[in-house]
Image 1 (tube, helix red, strand yellow):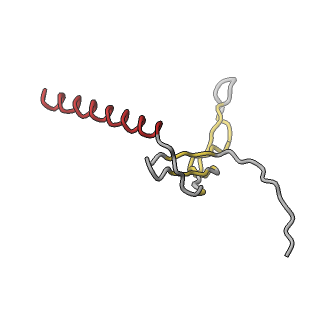
Image 2 (cartoon, helix red, strand yellow; image 1 turned 135 degrees about the vertical axis):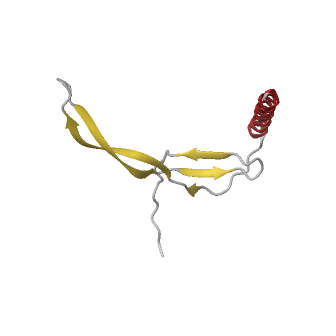
Image 3 (spheres, rainbow, N blue to C red; image 1 turned 90 degrees about the horizontal axis):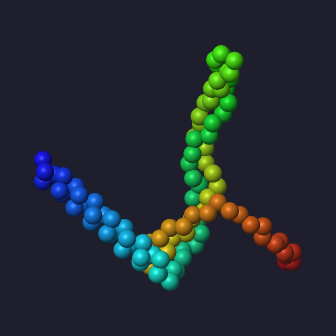
Length: 98
């Protein structure tokens, strides 16, 4: 049993070291980003159903449904870092003549 504990501790140290090396690599990388792609984020949305009597304070009951939030991602071709955003900004429209 002690060998298993030592191996787990060694693996945790190795993982921590690898995470630190990757973090340093990604922080110093002169990123070269791929095209931005639409990458919606799944989440569980709560929908109010009804109240359950509970003394003087009724308790709300919710049903949950799968839903998606708008999100975009891009990946660095050099280090593999992935960035996500859900922020949109208005783009100026210009007239187009044929």
